[in-house]
Image 1 (cartoon, rainbow, N blue to C red):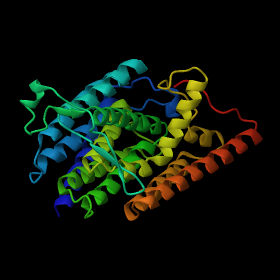
Image 2 (image 1 turned 45 degrees about the vertical axis):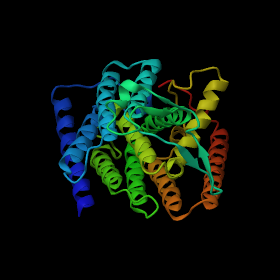
Image 3 (image 1 turned 180 degrees about the horizontal axis):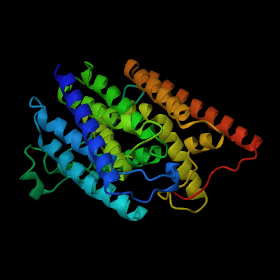
Image 4 (image 1 turned 180 degrees about the vertical axis):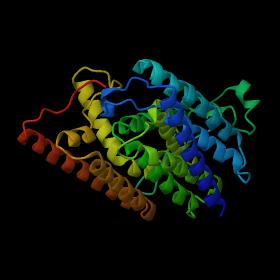
Length: 362
């Protein structure tokens, strides 16, 4: 009942706030300039992220059973920064360097508030230690609320920063067609919810946050499913990537599970980054190289594309919940093979139709 309450608070708040923001933007004609990746000509507001962040925070504060720890306060501070930076980007179109600065900042805030990751489990039953080198910042330890408040592991902190920046950018890339990022956010929240309830993790507070994330994303998705009536904007994609990334670290460092959920878009994103670097372009500057844009070029509808990616994310996500150890490596190999096969087929179809691979700047 507790989890249902958190879900409903987040869902209803997200639904209501998204409706209000859409009406407000339409009434006062607040239409930020859309990028080419949005595939729309008409004016559509870009502020759905405001509704999602607000709804998620409301769910946290209205779930009285959830104790707001020092680390969770750091997450809330990070969300405040995302709120500001995302709206600024939606209005002014910040350069990729400024966006990367804010992405790094929110990751550093999480680290500064005592979120740690000391090891990564391997598919062979062992672990990779990330806490061999540690350092202490005494001014922070005085306010940390715990013995490790100002104590940090070098490699663990660097991993957290890299992981959060990666997840933020993955959701930003997914936000290229209607409903894609929001739907993957719902699936990620549900998978994390079940993960937190497993005997191995057993962290009810994180289950509350995960199901609240799913409810938040679902409430927005109702307005964003094709054809979209509102977009999440940078604040929304940053919110989803940041929250999914942090919850993966919180939930017993189960990064591998989230990697399988997000594996398809992650592999697509890494391949696009490789192509950009190969062509001597910034890996952070947007273009239309991603697989979902190529599928659009082949004539697939937005609904067909998002249902395909939803299915892949859900399939590998629930597989990750049901297998352990070496079997997760097998699942990852299967995911990579599926990605390569789909990319190969799409490339052949594009060449057959004599359609050049999309390469327009966003």
